[in-house]
Length: 55
Image 1 (cartoon, one colour):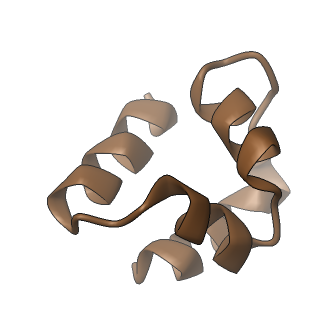
Image 2 (tube, rainbow, N blue to C red):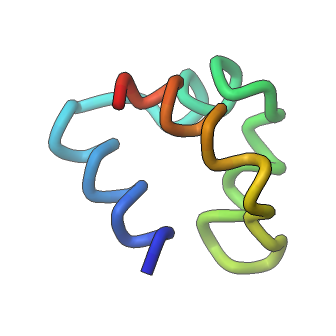
């Protein structure tokens, strides 16, 4: 699942979720909602999230 992979990379790189959110162009609350499955991660968001994670 994509959410688990995003969380794993955040943990392994010791990143702050709010920093990843802002680099990807999301508010911390919106990104948190995505990671907690309250909001859908749209396919077009993936490249921005990957860049923010340094992937």
